[in-house]
Length: 158
Ligand SMILES: Cc1cn(CCC(=O)O)c2ccccc12
Image: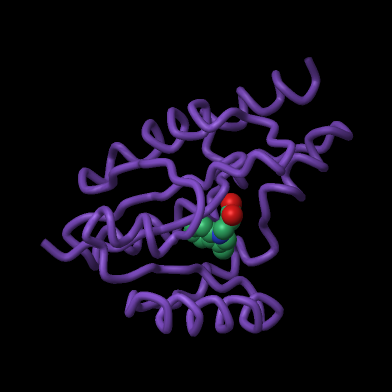
């Protein structure tokens, strides 16, 4: 079974994330979306809420599993018998950090990292920008799944 991990905070999942996850699901037998538990980060949604949203919006792919992890991603990959990570690259600015992480991860564990170019339609997207725009009354329709949009507006605007 060819598995790949797709790591992130997904606070919340955007259409940019979904684009990569969907394309990876067509290349691998199973995509394991790995939601990072980061206690230092002040998240808008709980890990459980993020897992719930990701599970709902990836159900249609049929071969996506959503898990949570803390600590090193390569330890998670080892525990789940996952030999590779897929990352979406939005712009050249992403590459420096991602290359460093890929080299470190490979050196530590032999886990490979495969890079996918994000759909240009979403290359400006990040969960932080989405939350910022929503907070100030902006419209993010079409940038996040409808399910996420509704929950996001409710959470941000109370
Ligand atoms: C472009 C992109 C960034 N990230 C991490 C974002 C995060 O940490 O929430 C992704 C995760 C999955 C698919 C694509 C992406």
